[in-house]
Image 1 (tube, helix red, strand yellow):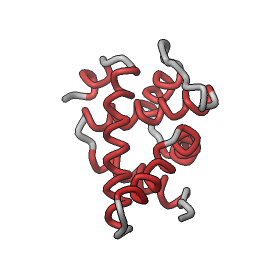
Image 2 (spheres, one colour):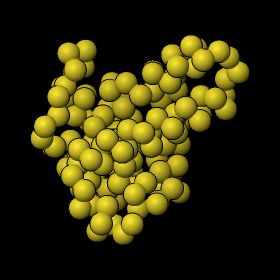
Image 3 (cartoon, one colour):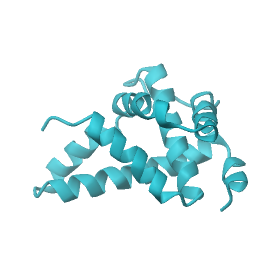
Image 4 (cartoon, helix red, strand yellow):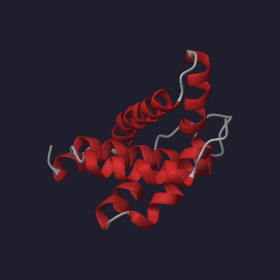
Length: 130
């Protein structure tokens, strides 16, 4: 898909798709680093997919973004129709949605190298305590 075609999707659609892209990366990382039961794997994954972690992750990669990526992030953060769960801070949830929007956009553009580059920067900067 072209950059223009991917950018034409609403931020909510990009975030919907990007959520799964980001979660697959997290699960792949967890499985490659840990030989344990599914319950423990799930617990480790949840730490990295919760809104507060994703919000922090966005802070890590924002300085690395080009103009187009920053625009996609802005669109995701400012998207309407977002229902914030009671367990989440609204600002963190919007930033997490922005991160997912970016990952959805990059995946639709098939820019897997960039996805991995940004994901690696997040993991390097935000290790998880076990």
